Each structure stands twice: as structure tokens, then as C-alpha cells.
Image 1 (tube, rainbow, N blue to C red):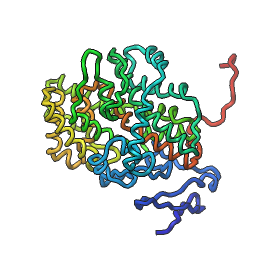
Image 2 (cartoon, rainbow, N blue to C red):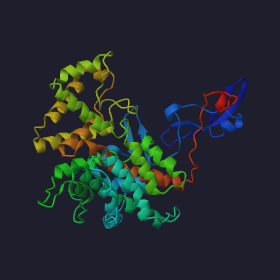
Image 3 (cartoon, helix red, strand yellow):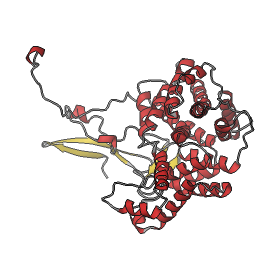
Length: 428
């Protein structure tokens, strides 16, 4: 294949370079198109066919159900590594040695304390404030308490900013939960690991000791690993484009939190639980809703099935399904919502209609029911997603800044009025 693509517009031909990725992906480099054609641009609403960057972090092949970080399969990472190991890999490019991991973990624990004045900010939120709104605001507020500009060319400065944010972010998330629940604000316990601390900070109350369930800890660890990075999705692209203006790490991640808040992105697992609750409220007849999902004239859609990127089975769903099954067996839960979820999963996986259309349960389906089983309220689901996605946001911001990428500035195709004469107010 030629390394040049030819484009013909109104009888004139233009040659554009073809770039190949390490996994044989092909991209047409159009950065000189507008200048070469004196104003012609491409139009791609939602950027579905536009590569905004070249990245070494994550490889995703939706047609074949492949997800890899820095060359390692998501299957190996989820089963053989911890959340912080994968975070180190994604951010710094290689799996940590034992010494590097110990230092990374200890440095994160050291940075888990927050300035006590942060409590004044959280006190200002009403109890009904959504935890994602609180999390976004508190993440942005970190800039005020740590105003020093990160020297992107200094490995030490960069490392310190990374561990600072990873250390403080789950505390902010737990505080958002506590504000919503009206419970005391907890700090991390340095005798616990990162995942254990998330559960401890969310659920421990002064009147009794919180007992950690190792199966629950493992399920949450795997689930958060599966969310660590997912290529150039809405929130990740937001972090990169905000960071391209040389906005700081905290501000850029805060923007990512806000982007994740949307129902079409991080809110998908919450939508799953809302659907299951509606099925229960209607009497719990799963077969009825399966039939409705098949009816093209019925607006009802099964949430948590299929994926806009994966055209086959979501590889993350295969992994977390097993963890979900182990968790439910251990907890012996009698929650009717979870019973409906299991019934829905069983029917859909066996139904020819869903198989032919590749409408398999995705990671959002399983994450929602796992969070419910862990006792995490629905409004906190997207916050948990944000904790998982944090390393990916950091890695993408770091890569973008070190690559010296230009400020993001998409073009548009104007479709408004042509030149009009102004009519003064007294004549209108």
C-alpha cells in the first residue's frame, strides 16, 4: 500500500501522508489539508472518525474485543496485578519493580491528607448536592491549596503531582459520599491498601469498626482496573484538550470528572440500576421487558447491553462477570434488584435475538450490580468510575504535555445567516 492518500476536490488533487500505528492501524494525516486547499476542512460530528493524537498508552480493537495497556492484555492485568500496579504502568510506561511499587504506594499514602480548610468547602454544599458535582469542585479546589505550577520537564515535579492527586482523590470521593449520607468525614488508614481504604473511608462510622471483606476488596480492585483507561473517550479527550491550553493537572482532571458525569458516559451504570428498579416496580417480569426490548416500535431499551466501541463481547465484561458471581455467592444477597439483574443476564445471554445483534452485557451492567452489592448508593456509581479512570486521565495529560501537543482548536462548518444589513432599534 502506498504511503500517500490522494484526495480530489473540484478537479484538483491533493496528497496526504498515511501514518501506520504499531498495531497496523492506518490514519490519514490531514493537518495540512486546510492550508493546502486554502480553507477546506473535514466534518466529523462527535469525532467518530478523527484521531486527535498518537498515543502509546492504550490499544483498543472493538471489532475483535481487544483491550491492552502498554502492550499488556486487560485479562492479564486484571487477574495478575493490583490497581496501583496498573496505574504505575499506564502513567509511567512500565510495570513497577518491587522497590518502585513500594515507594509509589508509600508516597501515595503520605499524600492522602487534605488541607483541613477543604472541609469549609464541603460544608458549603447542600446535603442534596450530587457527589459528582462535589468531586469535580473539590478536585478543582486542590489547585488553590497547591498553586505551584508543575514543571513538566522535571521528573520529580511530575511524579510528586501524580502521587499527590492519586493520594487525595479517593479521599475527596469518600467525602462526597459522606456529605451525601450525612456521616463523618473519614481519612485513610495507612495500614490498609488503596482499595481497602476506599471502602473504609466510605463506610466506617465512629461507633463501630468496619470489617473488610477480601472478596469484596478483590471485586472492587478488578473493577477499577477495568476502568483505568479506555483510549480517547469523552472524558479523556476533555482532559487532553483542557490540558493542551497548559491548564494544570488538577484543573484538567476536574474537567474530566464533569465530562464523565454525563448519562451517556460515566452515568451508564447508574442507568442500569434505574432500569432494574423500574422492572422491579412494574412487577419484576423480566420476560416482559425482554419482549419490549425486541419490539422496534417500543422506546424501551435495555441499559448495559452492547457497546458503541466493542462490536463483539466487551472483554472487560468477561472478566468482571466472574468477580460478580463470586461476590454474590459470598454475600448470599437476597436483594430483589440483583435477582432481576441475574435473571436478565441469563435470559439475554441465551436469547438468539441478542446474540445475533451482539447485544451482550457490558462492563456497565456488571459494575452497577457490583456497586449495589457492595452497598454503594446509585448516585456514587459515577464517582467510583472516576476513581478507576483517574490513572488514565493522568497518563493522557502527562503524555500530551510531554509530547508538546498544540492547543486543541477544532474547526466548524458555518451554517448560519449570510451577511445581513443591520436595522436600527427604532425601525424593528
